[in-house]
Image (cartoon, rainbow, N blue to C red; front, side):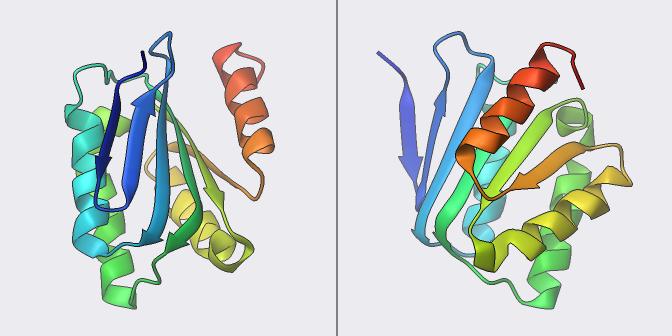
Length: 135
């Protein structure tokens, strides 16, 4: 049985082979819950520096103010030693796609391997290619 965690609007679970960590966000979340989600990820017992991540944010209701957005970026930068070798796909609603894209562009300046998608299937294909070394 898959270990599944749930806290503050986020569900987390690893794939059966422990290679992909899934985060599914639903409903209203806030800045502190997003930071807690990132910390939960890097402190999970199955997490490693080359973990692959798919964050499904299509059903989340969060529109950070500028200062919160910049603080989220700073928090991600503070986790660089843990996250920079991870492959991360963000699946966003059309409303949040631009924000997700901006996060990925900013984090690419710090050697993060992230990409934003509108469809979960596209994100899974990208991750699969990354895992097989095709990209």
